[in-house]
Length: 629
Image 1 (cartoon, helix red, strand yellow):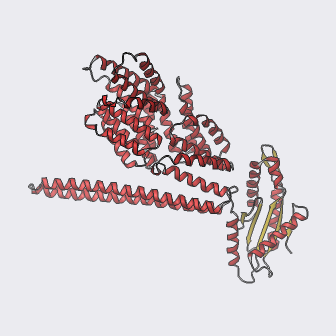
Image 2 (cartoon, one colour; image 1 turned 60 degrees about the horizontal axis):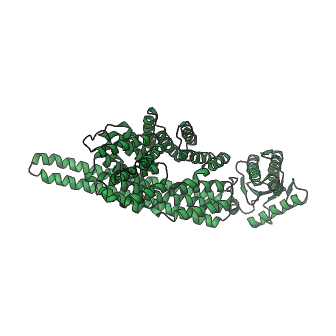
Image 3 (tube, rainbow, N blue to C red; image 1 turned 120 degrees about the vertical axis):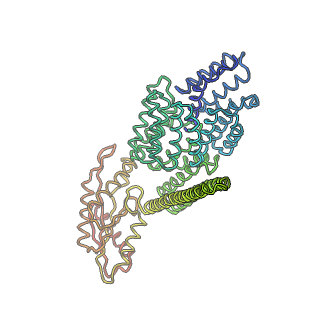
């Protein structure tokens, strides 16, 4: 999407500068006139520019000079990339390559930038940078328009490779160049692109401010294509902030504008559907998220951008895990890994982190807690490596800036050596500048370290919750409830018997799954947990220890009181009416109660007594409470 913004910028510049060169040949004037028209059409909608340029190349083929044809093809390739039609852009690049020695500096730079963007979309960042470096060699031969476009290309490259600090520097260089032109459209494009750098730096307020500023201009000029780009970027920012309702509003705006446009763009429908999928996933509305994922799946085959394909598969995997479609989730993860294997790890770090987290959730869903732990440890380790890299990069960049500043100041000192009075004043200013630079570097380093430490704390806390919580119902899982009960048992004083257990099991639960389906069965389990939680006391501890089996740990409680609580649970479950797609479901439960006594020397003995009481309840007709005697 950053590539898209930058090409729109280059076409805006083409329109602006097309009127500035009057002293050209007739052939050159004809070409500039056609390119200016193509630029205007591209700003309105790249599809119109593609049609226009293809018609020229077809109708004028016999009379076109080689240089005219190549320049038209470069512009056509840029518009193909705007339309996400990478394969056609690649074919044009192959045709142009044979004649690239005919190109002037400006056209050659445009050609190198197109190749760089193709490599970026294919996930090859090294080749992308190599093409930009070729373009940079010609920078002294470029006019302001071409320089600004090259700076924007470098910024786009660094955004794609998670070096937001350098990206921001290049955006500001481009901004300075375009500010001289006085064209508000160029500045709006740059503001839209700069917003993405601030988003990557977690400065979401600044990112939203810049994107809304650009959107305001696009709206005033009724530039529907650019409006949809800005709405999409705003939706992405709101997703990171978990502002799901704002995501939905922006995605709906994209669909509305695209539907009303005379030449709608299918890819924007995809962007809207996939962001709506994520928004409803954040809200926990699986039905709606599945609906919009299905709508977005119509466009997946046509996606040539490997990064967008990976993002799509990761979203799909999350939904499949949530729906307990574990085999499908495993297949989607395999496809994702195949795509990730084709791009450098440094360009895929955020995808790898998301994938590790999903693999951990999938392992928990499959009951493989050992593998889940390994996946989460791998996730945390990878995250630490990434943030160490970012931290070191940040430190080295600030050190380089500090050293450069120091050298500049020392040079000034030598130049002013003979002017003693001015030298003294300059020395003070230099020391202040060095001090401020050092303080700024230290503060930035501490800020990055603080953000990293906070994220690590949140990750470890989240992992602890996931490792000890039943994924479906949200209560303690078997390991957690057993650990808790064992700990409470160990703390009991000798001869102190106020410690009880209630073990209960849903009656004929298999019939619920058979008659109503597994999603309905999951709903029953969630409802029963909520009902049981309301029936027990605040200090009682409820956990799920099997498919439909639960355990309540009651500390400081005698058998009589525990039995009363068991009857409350039984009654509450019996009264519960659970609405499913196939009608109301009602279930009952069998409960076993036991209390610590002189014959129970370990917690396991007490648990066996509770299980025996539960078995007796089932043997005696179910839907009843039995006390171990």
